[in-house]
Length: 430
Image (tube, rainbow, N blue to C red):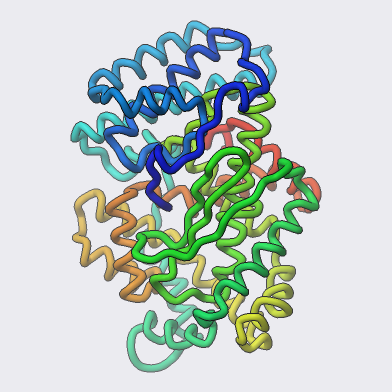
């Protein structure tokens, strides 16, 4: 996650986006108004506009005139009403129907964000449904306790399980002076694997930076023109598994590839201007985060990941490669506690527990260190129900991709690339 202002983004002229201006049409006119409405809301919510690379005049217009929230809500309602008058027939091609559904649902999400900014209180599940077109499943504490009981047997001894787990994990920290070398190796491998299956736009690239004092671990700032700025937060120790996780999630075949393919196939090839703006608190984020997380498994499935980490990354980091399988197996078990983060956020945002109790919940049921738990609470305070996009988004994407590809790796890559290049909604993954 990150915060990005409009001024940080590269914008392109309509001519550079399409070669020539797109032909006027009712949908294109509504799409233009949608983009301008998103930019207007960005003046009230600094986190809302995640990326923009559309016509620069629209950005200047948004910066020059601050439209009140009530007027923005009115615009969105009018746009949705107008959109209903151009709803495509059931016989229209799938991409045309998906485009219409996407624009309608993004506008609905925008309306919900306006209501929240005006002070409306939504429950965790109401908020995630309104913003991200999804409600994540709930899990009782007994669900996590059953997993914790298995981990207790792996890490016997004194102190809390989280403390014992942290002690066991220390030998897998990448030394600070070797972080960049390890990440560069992981990025190179992730790109090679992605490029073997997906036609990447010519000239795509990203810049990698290391930063501090952020509530997130890594973030992709998409710049337009097939370029990204990827930042890695070094506030906390970086463990060896994070190299592949972040190389894939933020880069290949995750956020960088997703944004580049959207720009290539939807903006440049089809002239769909609405995709030049990315509102963070919208259904688009569940697709973006879900594909970024599942993309790790697509690029490095099962044993292939263990073998690559053992042969390349452990050695580059100066860690014991003989422990690669042990580490991977344990992390797979710990990852089953992922939804504890959702439950912590759900209880906190529903007013059932305090910030301190949320951190304690994360330490107990997600095995977070105190420092990481505090960082996660800050994340939840800032981004709220966005947390479902990572794990539930991943699960929805996995089920969708596997349902369209089976166990065949080539078909899985093909289905994955098709999803990245489409305007499919989270509700369309069920």
